[in-house]
Length: 266
Image (cartoon, rainbow, N blue to C red):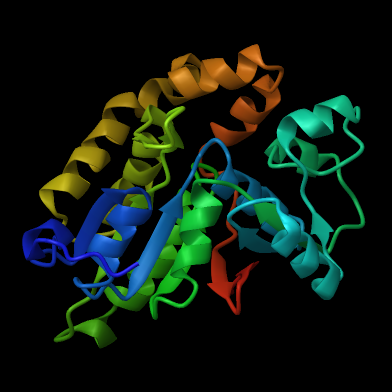
């Protein structure tokens, strides 16, 4: 996609930016020239990536579970994740987008993980020229520390660091973007951790996300469970996923997308 954006919509006046979905990613990374992109999809793509990488699994994002995803999995010798409801019908014998399902899985080394939101954004950024990271509430502080030491270290003085945090969001029935509370909070969690580490230069949009997280942090677990996305998953039998996704700072993995694969860096 080569959309023509108003220059100000890319937030290029600020080194730290925030926006939503594939179009927001394109606006704040492409014309604005961001060096790093952090994708956040709390329920559940980036949470599932975090859990997988915690277990040493390499994750290959893909937009859809289609023939191309199957071919990729075969070529890589990887497991292809099924849909949540398909896994439920199969009584949990297959790995899905559910992060809780990965906690019960063994002997998986590579996983092709389709998702219409976070995975689609990550897949689309693979050839963007920026470094792509996956963040969730579980590993937001580790991701922030990784970025702070590289972009705001003494060696970076005199250079213009650039970072955009992209909230995946969900989809309405007409396939338009539905901004969701959990991804606003997850993105804000990364941004708040960066600010706590001394990072400056947040755009007003990024400040909104940061402050939204700080407002909810004392009651984070309950609020994630109570928001529309959390209630939806719980009602459909996936309350365990909401619990796994709402755990804050329990992981030190930093998944970075390299050659189409998320794996942890030291």
